[in-house]
Image (tube, rainbow, N blue to C red; front, side):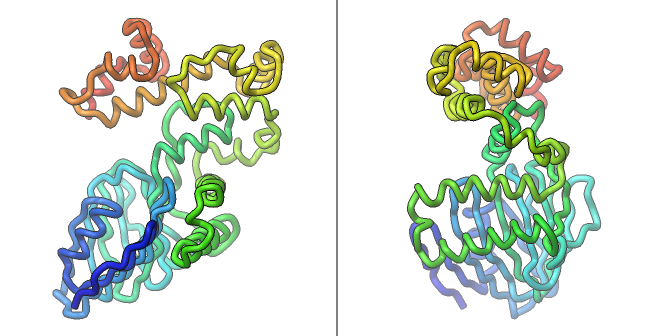
Length: 327
């Protein structure tokens, strides 16, 4: 039995008893995958409701039978929240984990990923989070660039506290998208998209949590936040300190002082670091022969290849070509 997909602007409803069709939709909306039905159950019925929401993809998924799903590396952060039943999963070295209605599974962008057993009665809320968007949001909250991408704790308590609150936010947003209301309007959707990213960073465990929880992070002055936002939005732009000061609404001297006090570096040093991180991310994801170091350097506003390589090595402990060859 197959029900053709019903697709609105940002919402897909899909039902099928065909495993290959079920796999194809997961591939298109989430990741490349292989779905196995261990007992060959005739009860298999994939039920998907999937919503695109900026840097996030939200899905309610169930299969009607016990299944095993292999994904490989995801390339994105991802959270699976059972709404009923349970799922056994592993990623990289993290093995023998079980997600339940009280404890969600949190996946990193890297590491072989498998759902070893999705129980017959398991329905789940699946949340795919763009890795670049999450790390940029964390940088904005901290007011400084990250040295390495954030690693989230692999399990999230969704029965209490911030984790429960975040799941309620996700479910509410999902329902509103399905209803086709105001969340179809960008001016309403964008702040909520940012709130969901921030909510995950405040709910999940990671090395920056204590820093986010300190009140001084929220109290960084507006001029610093405005300058940081501008640099993250347009890192290739040839900003000057004067232009950043104008955007921030303060004098050059005040902006320099505020950056030293709240960020620990000058505005232009911060901009260079943002560009280095963007270049590092592109090289880390690139393939030799398809990605060229000099082109990446130029794309991120480094005009002198030698100085770029020197700064890159000081920042990441290896040359740009080494990062590219590590793929």
